[in-house]
Amino acid sequence: MEAEIRDASLVTLGDCVLEPLSPAFRVEGWDKSSLGKFYRRFGARWQSIAVFCEDTGDVWQACRDAGIRVYVNGGIPADERPTRPIMTHPKDTVGLLEFCGWDYPAVAADPRLRADFDPNWWRDHHPTTLERLAYTTVMAKDLDRAKHIYLDVLGGTLLHENESALTGTRNAYVALGEVVIELATPIREGTFASVDLADNGEVHHAVAIKVADHAQAEKYLTSKGLSVSQRDDETLLFDPATTHGALFRFTTRSVPNDPRV
Image 1 (cartoon, rainbow, N blue to C red):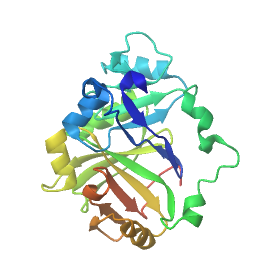
Image 2: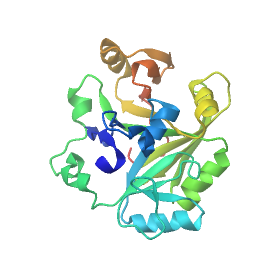
Image 3: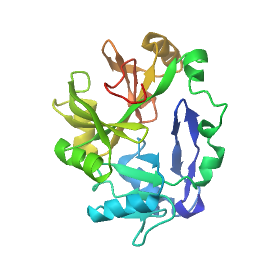
């Protein structure tokens, strides 16, 4: 995308799409772009969560009514009702969110919308035994504020709340359309979560992949050079130094009340 001086790919993985992307380092001025500034500040890590919606204008209006800053590509403020993808200011929505309408060009190539698409192919034929995106985690300083934004402003549904000894966080799981977002706040020092929040603020923190067999998934992934940092009976946390800075979790656990299950 020349306007944003970046290179990117969209990669289907089960029921979700991941977007590996980077500044176009070969182009002069890459460090002045929105992504370039993000990269210089935070390095390699998760950046944002993108969701399809029926009308980006309705989301824009809800955000504006709540005092949330909204932008279009290139970091340009969306001062009028938009007809293209919009992004929120990460400080206003506890992490950077993107909303795309169904007229987004990538939709035409999205295999998940084809009648013959099989989201269980990975579970049945790939050694990861991958089933779906379990949830994606956003770090929050104030869990009540985060819940207000995702539930009251964006219209999400609260599925479950708990505390995790493995991640050292107190969590609220919110369904936003077909995506489950874990809003998490640290309750113990020295964890990936507490360090990330202290160093980087409220950010998109981790992605959890639901698998049928985490022992089989671990065997395969470690054979590819990934390293498990922490674990419990259900979940593996991988060392971000072996996953290009992106915190990955692989888990056999389903979020209670997950409507996709």
